[in-house]
Image 1 (cartoon, rainbow over the protein chains, first blue to last red):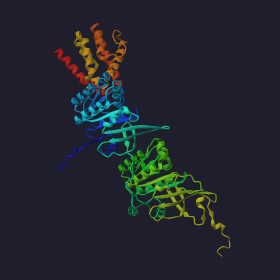
Image 2 (image 1 turned 135 degrees about the vertical axis):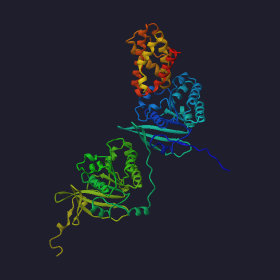
Image 3 (image 1 turned 180 degrees about the vertical axis):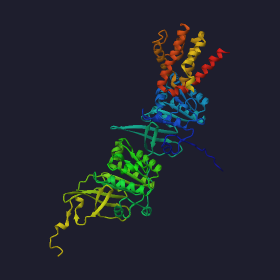
Image 4 (image 1 turned 45 degrees about the vertical axis):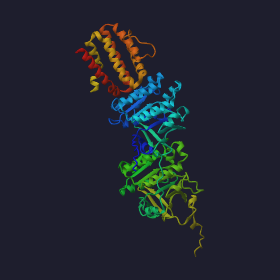
Amino acid sequence: MMSHRAVIKRLPTGIPGLDSLLGGGFPEFSFNMIAGAPGSGKTTFAQQLMFSQANQQCRALYFTVLGEPALKMLRYQQQFSFFDTDKVGNSIHFINLSADIASGDFDQVLSRIVEEVKKYSPQLVFIDSFRSVVQAMKDAEYKLQHFVQQLAMQMTSWQATTFLIGEYLTPDTDASPVFTVADGILWLSQNVHRNSMVRKIQVVKVRGQAQTPGWHTFRISEAGIRIFPRAIQGPVTTAEEVRGKNDIRLTMGIPDLDAMLGGGLPAEYSLLVVGPSGCGKTILATEFLAEGVRKGQTGVLAAFEKSPSQLLSGKLDALVKSGKVGAINTRSLDLSIDETLHNLIEMIDRLKAKRVVIDSLSGFELALAPEFREDFRGSLYRMMSVLTSMGVTVLLTSELEDRYTDLRFSPFGNAFLADAIIMQRYIEIAGDFKRVISVVKVRASAHSSALRLFHITADGIVLGDMLPQYEGILSGQPTNMMENIPSHAGN
Amino acid sequence: MAMNRFQPQVLFDLLSKRPESVASLSIEFWELIASALIPLIGKEGFTFLYGRSLSITQSTFPWLAAHQGPQQADTQFILLKQSLEEQVFTEARAASHTLFINFITILTVLIGESLTTHILPVVWDEYVSTITNKEFP
């Protein structure tokens, strides 16, 4: 026998990033709670959803209750670009329920809501703030459970998708019937840590569909809310796939370095360029991007220290101005890894970029809100995984103070996540400050193990000689073995 | 377009045509304005705005009566009608006109010209049509 199951349509939300969190959108005719502390963005969330979806075929009713005065709400919400005055009174109707609530007759409140729903036949219904309703009911000793169940049934019968907006710090017992009856619960929060503020959203529950669990960061700008769903690590690359990728190599713009890498950097690899301040990491990264442009490959630069226009060499700035390299400059101190990743992905997609530079990890870490610095390593791992699975090759620079007593490749212990590592270092020879470069690692590929001098010229990086006659180079003060050989040696 | 026809001067002109009914026509007008705004900003929101407009207008027309403290709009309108009825036509018309200008000015500052001129022309048209029909039955 054939079974005809109810098909639940998913309603798009118009809030960037939210549909994927919900598993496709809000279920049609569902009864939802948007909860969070005051100032967490609930009303903005509700109005962005409403204004983006409302049209002649999808009408919306927005019931305002005692909470935020409607006059102020209208004043502030129209600062967002999604607020469309033309929709007010046409596809969107605001109804103030304050007087009905104040009467204390909640059967009458329910009747009034249903009456307005009958009048306008809305597809979307909002009640802001529902906590004010709950509070008023408590004073009137009215059964909240009865009200919520009646409201949920009525709204579903009238084929409306409903959103209750409430100020809750936690799912308190007063409102537990609301949380029980709700088909969907979204929780918004804002965490303040030192001087940074991070907004987060959690899909606590959506009946009948798989949502993305956990907290996700979001930002409120003039355009409204934008959510940055937490990046999920892509499929693990097998050894065979790695070997396959090795066939395609990217040239670095420094021919001798390509030779040291075993024929260039394998495509879709992450390369960590590590070295002390001023040793030429950004210059090497610039050569990498410039070489890409020469080969017809666009690039993206995430600059967390200096913007291209601030650098002495105009080369990077010229690449950005040419449009072949997109630049993300930020000095913000409240970023999340996911926001950065979304900005990068957006630019990579737009430019169809093949090369990405993150300059530098130290600057990136500083730009993050303090709470994300704690899990910097783990987040970076996810970020690299997502970027390389997009088919881009990533170069990261990392500043490392040279102590000459130990050999380290990153201050974060994150060298393991790089597929390849290039180390730059200062050494002193005969009273002269010199720079050396070496390829420490290229996963699944043969590479040079030499330490070579290099020079920074007006044309970029030029590799010099190897230093076979020296030992102790990594100590910073190499010894010339030839000078220690007795004059009769070799005779 | 909406802005052109939604001008306080039009109210002034309409009241000029019915000197004997300035008070009742003014109240009809305010009732329509209230009916358009109360669903949007609530009774309290409207009453506070109206009260503030009345307070400003009282500096020019001190005879305008107003309740102290928050009152329902309909109570305020009854007082307005009584005050207007006690004045000569030109004074009543000038006060009604000024009260409207003050109200619109505050509303525009708070919710913006765009939303104001989007909401009110609907009732404005209704009002103009009502007056016209009364004038030429």
